[in-house]
Length: 463
Image 1 (tube, rainbow, N blue to C red):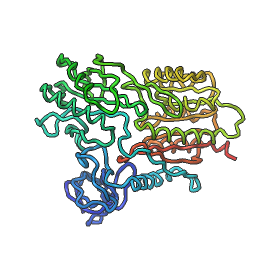
Image 2: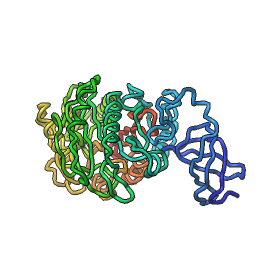
Image 3: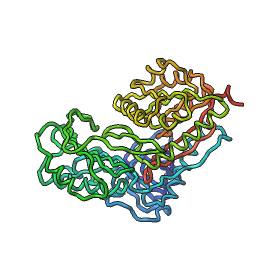
Image 4: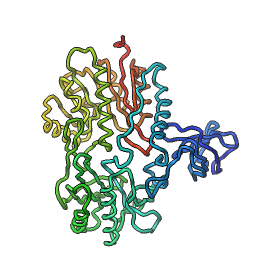
């Protein structure tokens, strides 16, 4: 029998969401491993065993899957932790995601629940309008790198100058910044010792205008003037124009992009994006779906489900848009609502929602900064409909209990991590909710991620 530290080999027989494959080893045990595709032959180092199952770490893909019928699109695949499936045709990626999610959602859906299929992204490559790149090195003491973490590692960073998930304008800026910082011999921030200088490069690009925001983040360890770098970036001659360049500083020990102070090197700290006839002001750190054209399809499906959930109600409803971010969903639903109340924990995002609603001349939207758990009971009007778009980890159990007490007939739940939705749905089912219909919208080609949109109804209101 397999034990910890052993090596096992086999062909991946199935993959479950999110991105966990399994095969039966020669010893007869079922082995589970992440970051694999159906049909790949893999070599795995066993990490732990429980109840006759073994979990392992991927050592190597020793033979590709029959589904991998094209070459990699970028120079650091498959070492990079960003993509997984770019050697599969996009149609096969959609089929794989659909199979995984249908199996998962079947745990909480009735056998006759309507499934409305998967909607693919309009753009397979170059779809990301935002990317956070890290400074580091690929090997300890090696040359400076700027890009994405190597798969399965905490510290190794691969230079992502050929990344295909973003527009070429962004990889040109990355290359320019890396060349400048290497030439100036600026030290990277060391995540082990919490010493050093260079931390992150945040890039955002408007799909509508092509404008680009550049945000370089360092510690406060040095007093370096990045004005020459700003001039180099502005002279790159890209397809779009750079609308703002900023240098931010942050000394937090957490490995997360957090800016404590910033200086403007050029321009302004925002651009505008348009979706479904509305205009949104997007800043460097505001939440906005990373796939703009895909988000239009996502929100279009949300509007369809809301319309069905409200069918026959006879009057315009009060809609709660919970975990509302910059208010995109609420504003797109405003034409069918008497009033929209959005609740968002992050003050900056809520302020952006209010500003965008005013710019779009929407007078029936109120956006509140605060915790859903605390703010839900403070809204003067009771809801007729709920729209939930929680963070990846789902809804706080206490907030979920409070939501279940709202006397509404239907709600729409949008999830970017379906396992969190399934956990929440189990609690909602116990409170008398059932899935009426659901679908998938792929905002993240080449990766294991996908958005799930669910229309739910309360049993006592079902005909």
